[in-house]
Image (cartoon, rainbow, N blue to C red; front, side, top):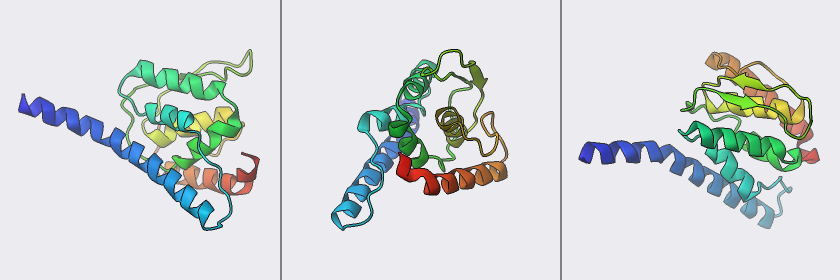
Length: 162
């Protein structure tokens, strides 16, 4: 019984940590704005919650979060995805189906991302139309780092549009 309780808390720790990171990022943004720093895009709490759900162990929760995020306006989704693009945590789910629900006739694609950044890159690709390396089905950590750097370069040039 004690071992099970320990295992359960270990599973929940990364989710709690992600929530704390999202809260800390929102606090830092607020403090920067109060200090007169240049405004950065704020992340809608409902969108942040759905991004957090992408880390769930339950495939149905992850798929619902993917579908929700792809159905939203990119201007509110992209900042939340970019805020987490460098997260290299291993995903619990084995695959997701990605289809841009805002456009009819777009193909459904099944991806098998290994890490959180792999899934975020796939969602960013479908949301923005940009691609900076194919890590959607997993890749080497070197490929991930290169792809993340390219996404971050793109974001520094395009942040004002979101």
